[in-house]
Image 1 (spheres, protein in one colour):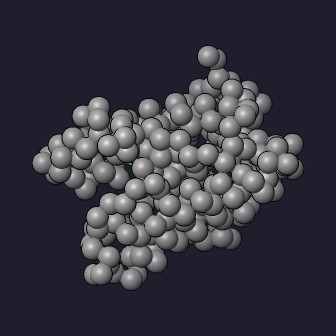
Image 2 (cartoon, rainbow, N blue to C red):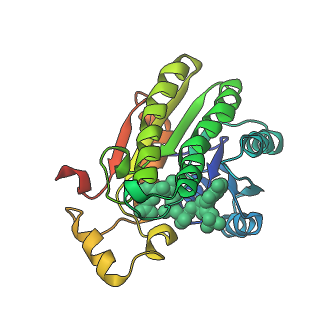
Length: 248
Ligand code: NAP
């Protein structure tokens, strides 16, 4: 299956690292003009340079609606139109039981992992509609469908992303905008690799039926498929790429 995005602009949030960087790289290699957005402009610019293919970078904190609107405006102004969007930026947050969870961390995780996806849809969908339609992928998690002790904010945000995805897809099917969510299992990126010691990493790997964590490229393959015309009858759904984590 040859997936191509020639003539399309794709905007990826949190694109300077991990899963977002892999998706940005693969989209660019498949012909898309990619706009990488991240908190840190220098990191996003360095990644855009590595990716090549005319990739552009912009700074945006997805928890700030004004910055998300400016990010979408930048993509449209610089490339002429927006067709594809990946709401990927996210953070982990402290590991504490719900009854002891720091309120400020709750607010931070919800503001980035849930509100940030809403702002992406709120400003991205009108731009994609204006371009004649396209597709959006929201990066949720396996923790969009199952719980995980000591991660109440992350789990609540990711469950919220799955519900938001379904509703946005219903709202905008008639505008020719397909909207889906992805639920990765644990993936080797700085988000997990910098937090887990070897024993934790081995234990987390064992929770996946395939006995390992995934790679950003394995998530990117699914994202590119869902963004492509090959997935023309797929909208409003949640797709796992989890090595069998949730099959247990
Ligand atoms: P990552 O390597 O840490 O990359 C996330 C990127 O998002 C970083 O460049 C980060 O910048 C940026 N970012 C953080 N807060 C932001 C904000 N407010 N506005 C804009 N950008 C922001 O993490 P990842 O593992 O690739 O995660 C990407 C997505 O996949 C997240 O939504 C995550 O929840 C989801 N996910 C990850 C896994 C996993 O196991 N890795 C599993 C399931 C789902 P800084 O580095 O400067 O903070």
